[in-house]
Amino acid sequence: MGLQQKIEAKEFVILAEMEPPKGADVSRMVKNAQKVKGMVDAFVVPEMSNAVMRMSSLGGAMILKSKGLETVMQLNCRDRNRLALQADLLAANGCGISNVMVVKGEDPGLGDHHQARGVYDLDLPELLAAIDGLQQGRDMAGIELNGAPEFLVGSTVEAGARDKSPELILDDINRLGQAGTRFFITPPLFDLAAIEPVWKRVNREKTTVIPTVLLLKSLGMARYIARNVNHTFIPDTLIERIQGAPDKVRECIEIASETIRTLKKEGFGGVQIATIGWEDKLPEILKRI
Amino acid sequence: MIVADKKPIEEIIEELGAHEKILILGCNECVTVCEAGGKKEVGILASALRMYFLNQERDVKIDEETLQRQCDHEYLEEIRDKVDQYDAIVSIACGVGVQFTAEKYFSTPVYPGVNTCFMGATEERGLWTERCQGCGQCILARTGGICPVSRCAKRVLNGPCGGSSDGKCEINKEVICAWQLIVERLKALDRFDDYEELSPLKDWSTDRAGGPRKVVREDVQP
Ligand code: SF4
Ligand code: SF4
Image (tube, rainbow over all chains, first blue to last red; front, top):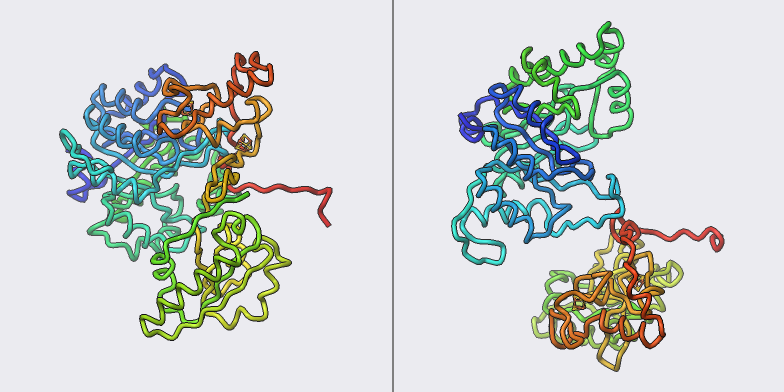
């Protein structure tokens, strides 16, 4: 069953983030993805997250697709204007990529090319409307297309972020949902309690919420996120647990697997596993769920 | 100066909705020069609105005021005593003035009465043209005093592009190619050699990349 069918059937989906390389050598990305073929429903290919230049999501997604792997292509508002966004959507669909995820994209000032100009010609709702228009056979100028693409569209929502009010999040979900978003990926979640205010009130029939499960790599990383990343809440007990573990990496892998099991039990639509550079740990995480 | 253009009166009327006590607030600086938001325009807009509301048989009070500047605390304070008499302000200063007024009088709705367009010059009465986009890293020294950032349609820094023809820009036969002007000026200054040099990669972080900008001058701070 493909990602779209699984989401429609309300089955728990497993997405794995797969960063394309900073360079032209795709062997590692392909190897890591192939290792978990059959265990993952689709690979989410980020579009230069944190404004760090690397291979495009379209390129990465096409390469994985050519290996028989299902992908979710990301599109950000930062790097392209409405012409290029629509053109890449058509290109993606023409190459058989039918899952897209729209994101705003961090400001170039935060990345490794901080002198670059951000584009932000379209905002998320406008991009979603453009995708909807393309699917109806017209571009943003109203001109008829020679063949309309079809997409499963996802986006992100800050559910579980400790600095966001649940009302605003629910509002976002409604607005983006009405604009055609079928699944929502949240920031990293370490504690169910953080997402509960949204989860309790969201229309679960209509909305597929997919929390991100981030693999912690060390005690230092956990502490850093807990202290400095506003939207991610890591409970002290979790930090103590890593601190007390004889094999910290193993413990972090276990925490990720455990979180996935919990989210599945709670009825979430799925998870997105983010391993940022440790994609080779995916099999271990997935084995334990 | 900052060049603004009048908003259609229908748009202002729509902004105003059901407000009944309205202050039209002008500015004596740039928008006066470009004849969009000075004392004269305050009067014209106020009369037009009065006529409109009269025709609608609506009792709406419209007052007029023009400040020296709307982008300075000092002058904006002059209306503090009477702001409470109004349930809305239409500012016909540039976007800076509209925002500064709104920040200062937080609970009074402030609506823009002009479209703020660009930084430009008065070529002749009734004709203003763009000269600068405030990119924060001025390169005029290299381009013969003519700005490709604001005057070249593609913002190319090593022009002209292939669309330049007979000294005109490809977007419109009426528009002079900025790079044509740059080349002519460099020649006139006997600096044509400069044209051969490639322009270094532009740092847009002083432009809008990196969010809203500020200038801090400790030497003049109190
Ligand atoms: S180079 Fe930048 S600062 Fe200089 S005139 Fe052009 S836009 Fe203005
Ligand atoms: S024709 Fe000249 S002004 Fe127009 S885009 Fe090309 S270089 Fe710029």
